[in-house]
Amino acid sequence: MRKHIVAGNWKMNTTVAEGVELAKAVAAKAAEVPAEVKLIIAPPFTHLYPVAEAIKGTAIGLSAQNCADHTKGAYTGEVAVDMIAGVGCEYVILGHSERREYYGETSAKLVEKVKLALEKGLSPIFCIGEKLEEREAGRHFEVVTEQVKDVLFTLTAEEMSKVIVAYEPVWAIGTGKTATAEQAQEIHAEIRKVLAEKFGALAEEISILYGGSCKPSNAKELFACPDIDGGLIGGAALKAEDFIGIAVSF
Ligand code: PGA
Image (cartoon, rainbow, N blue to C red):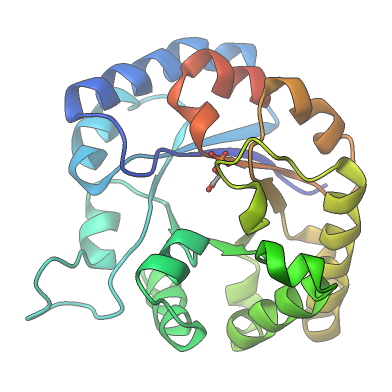
């Protein structure tokens, strides 16, 4: 069976103190979540060390929100995979649409980052998704297929087995507009079909998460879809109650 995963992307929110408090609140409620659901939190870089301490001894996984495309050296402001792994991260979000859009991350750059993360033993949470104008032009399947092929098709099957995919339609992120369960399911199934072209039966084992205004009130319907294996949660991950409310929706 595929892993069920609910991951919280805190983005650029909370102070360190607030972040530690939030992590503790999530940890305190984690027992409410069925054991087969993996919880992951992705705080800002500055919070990783104290948050790792705060969730020590729990089953909650720690993720960074990005990493550098080089291993070390003169790259002012960047954070390397070694540093992330060194503070206890097991995951790293890569290719989020905000990074693609505001920081010019291309597929070529993402190939580097995904490979470096995998070499360090980190599991990338690799994000894909179409923009509103692409969906309106009926190009959503084409866009996500290209995003998958450009980056994930460069991996070996062994590497791919460590990757978590997150489908996040850009028009649904932080907008309050969620994809309908039908819209999400059909594209998740398509993503899995594309993965199967290259990786065969392994595609059935890859967790594909939905992201974009996912909240306790709509998670149940989304998670009931056969190809939706969990969620990547932004806004609703900033409240322990909502984050856990989503995770109990399986
Ligand atoms: P949202 O963000 O839940 O606030 O829409 C999701 C994401 O960007 O990962």
